[in-house]
Length: 179
Image 1 (spheres, rainbow, N blue to C red):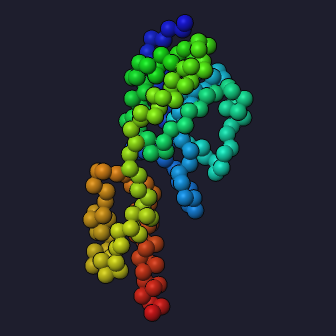
Image 2: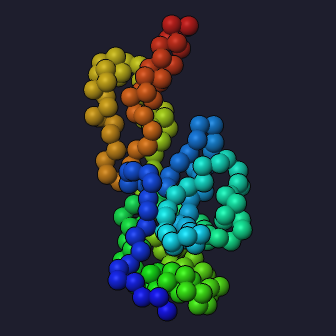
């Protein structure tokens, strides 16, 4: 069996506390997220989301040159990064790379990934609309309202809050002016 001096790190392309969360405009659900073991050249672990709407996957995954395990799109960065220190996960990855009980280790990793912590994610547009921010409130506070409705730590905000507020303000102005 291959011996590594250190555990395999998981490459995460996106920033933020919910790095595998992506919901495209007009879509009801976020994109599918995954942990991937790329076996094409030097084995590499990564976390990401499917950039294609629908069920498209890269050819190299389809051909079995990489293994993808689905994870919840709301999985926290901290939880993904913790896999680099999870001895059971790392052992199973190394055994897959070495060709030892691949099917059993793939299933074992599936079980490990169901235990990852998730974080509540709120889209900025939904947050502004759900906050029922009135035109009067926006007029009184201007964009100081940003501080008032910032998330309180129980969830994170994704998207452009100022743009969402501006859009909501225009919507409210249109309704008021067209009365």
